[in-house]
Image (cartoon, rainbow, N blue to C red):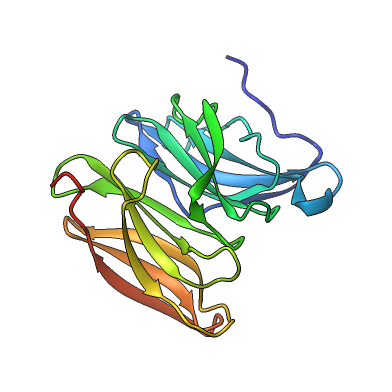
Length: 219
């Protein structure tokens, strides 16, 4: 299979925080770039990724996601072995998260879509997978779940590979029109808790909190 190459027209390349591991040696690093001259509404932006099967000795470039304006991606594995890429929409229209699904470990993308269950004010988000008390993977996602401003920092939980998010925890909220909470990052602490590191109070503080995992709806 011929691998895509880095385009000479790429002006920027950014790496995200998350690293996805599976297959069993696949490492996938979400990234994004801009291609060609600047376009209106940042439509020259595109998300992609780098992956390696030899512990980082050699990296390959994934296909671009194919959604203009996609950037600041975060990735996780689902319980059925697929890779899910969750992205900020730099275009700002619509103000919801963008999602890509891959069945080959991030080499190509089977499905890409706007997730209208995940509002976003054009900000970074964090995606994490883990197990519920040793059982099936759940997904946790943190972002400022507000279409107008960086407010309503929320951690949501999905038990169906990221299609629905029936459980949520509101972490930060304020009535006043300010950026209450912005960038965030999730980490698994133990079988019953995850941690959240995030910006707070108009970027004046970096805060860490501990969140208890909810039970799946079926339990």
